[in-house]
Image (tube, rainbow, N blue to C red):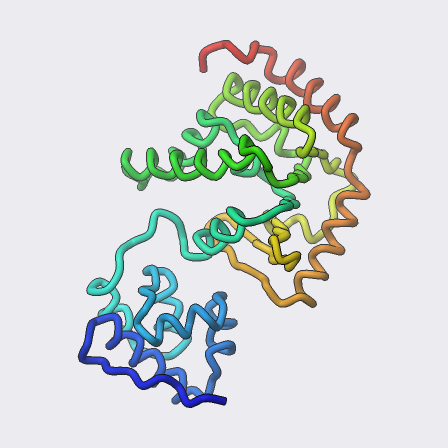
Length: 281
């Protein structure tokens, strides 16, 4: 194994930060992979941080400080090397993988971002009242940009499994929900998009913890993204990904067929959101 690259902490604040991370990691007796597992990032990202070639976002810096027992030293250095990201670092990693994915399998207890209407997004992001107007606009712009891949010449295959509760959980008012469900129906007409509803009586216990997305990359490798209300993480180890894939397969087998799902979505629109898609919110 080659010797680790020498660091010169005098060259920049990022180098000073990276040097301190390496010293604390070695003092703890951990490899870069072990530290990465503790803060939910890849070992290659830890290597970049230690070399000063990548500045960690604030959430990751806080996690490193806690894991390494830095007693706030890394938190004190962070303002001099980075900035607060628009999304948490785990979401940023997911976006990078998602942009390259050839297949996307997702289960969600909320309409997934890739299938949301703009007004649904605004209602959802607006619920976090500490976001500024500029933050909200940027978040909407980023999410719409992610959706643009579905309109590209060679879009990814997309499988969506929705918890049945998603159809009845009102976001933004009844008119917004009616148009959101109409948008889901429109997506089902695309040849590479499949939407299924998982009925209440068929729910798997694993579905109660949040959402899960399996991304198949051009290399045919697969990664998993797990997300809760204000937390998330990337799973890359093949054995762990395989376990979640098996759970996803069970959900898919228990879900309504795409045709039956579309019929349920349409019925829900008619019974709970009788406004037409063109009605104002």
